[in-house]
Image (cartoon, rainbow, N blue to C red; front, side, top):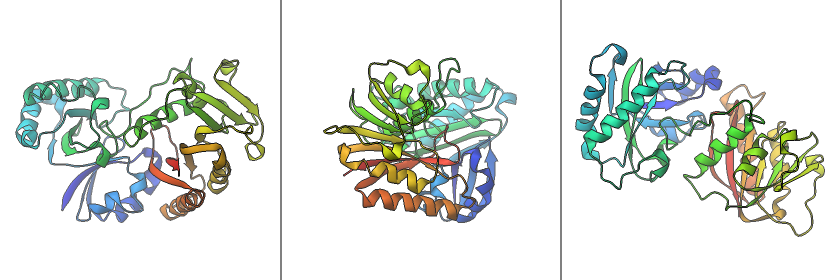
Length: 350
């Protein structure tokens, strides 16, 4: 029997019972809003089963301390010393501490997580070459991940690639300023590229993106801010704040009827279109001849109307089959903070 901490987004709460059944969970405890402490004799199902697509992050838990940190004197020092004695011999590349309920309005546990990490790093005395931030980690080397919350302290060690992200709990949360944001989709692609960077280099500086169904322009805006060139297609207009951008070409046209200019080759294609997933991926793959070899394809798999895990699995398998049949290989897939009942799939053109 092994114990694991897994993260499943709240949007999939109606499927939790079905997910736990697939994972052969014998005991489960909810921690925070999205974390579950589970015990199972079939840990391999976390990484390879119909439930895997719903698990944003997972780590085998090797130390748990159920307690109320707010009411415990000297919690930080006791916790830092304890995890040192339990994990020092495993030589983690760094130590990262997160909140069990990152969306909670109370800032106490955010400060506690930061202070615990600072003290733990002092106690461990990691070498100068150790990563100073989550982004500096080697995704293939083991990291000590810890979480704190009103439920206590939970720790485990895993490589970010195996766990599902370089931050405790997965991908980096992208904060948005309502006054400057075109739409939440901007944060979605920013978080998605941050996740993808664990698996392959991002498109080069100045790369040319083709975005299908771009309106109102949230993702367009994020790509432009990164210095990319963007050709955006949609029947609806883009936000006026994007007008006259020197690296933006917008065509107000039905995506299904769009034909790129002769001789053009795009470095990446992006689709966050609503509608039937099979139709959406077909609209992406029909443009394969206008993509450079090795081009990146980012596709949002919408699951609206799918009520069971089996329904979602059928949709995903159909999308993957269409993509593969047109020369696109799957790099990785995930559920992002800003995803609703949908998943982000990353492909590469052969």
